[in-house]
Image 1 (cartoon, rainbow, N blue to C red):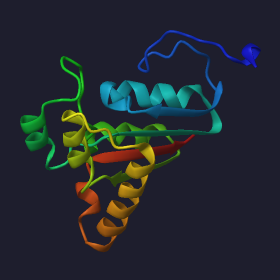
Image 2 (image 1 turned 135 degrees about the horizontal axis):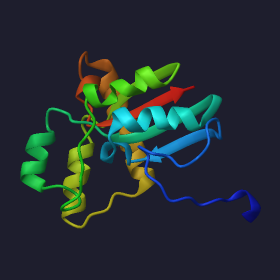
Image 3 (image 1 turned 180 degrees about the vertical axis):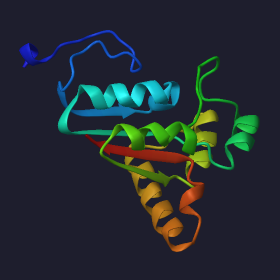
Image 4 (image 1 turned 45 degrees about the vertical axis):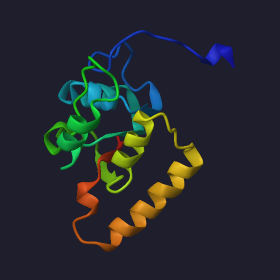
Length: 156
């Protein structure tokens, strides 16, 4: 298995790898730190035809400014810009198929607040909360668009 692992130092905006190298790319909570107009085409470039990209990141929802004012940012002095429609636009021009799904409308900020006070919500509990959040927001027109997290999907 070690013969299949190759570690390379680089940044998403300038991936130091050949075109058509990977079947899939997953970026867990990192895209909001990237310059998306440079990173998205790079990720598409290194994917093989039919290759898939996905990520889960913060979205600049209506409560973002209030939440960060009250709770502060999760990490101090980090270049962190939640995704917006404009920042996600390169996904749709870089990939043949692309999709954006917002979630976490009711749960993200309360869970972040709990975290600030030292209460960590276990993954299994968070998964169930997101499922409930998703079910509720799917029944109320416009609520999905207020989600403070986003999942992005692209296929080359």
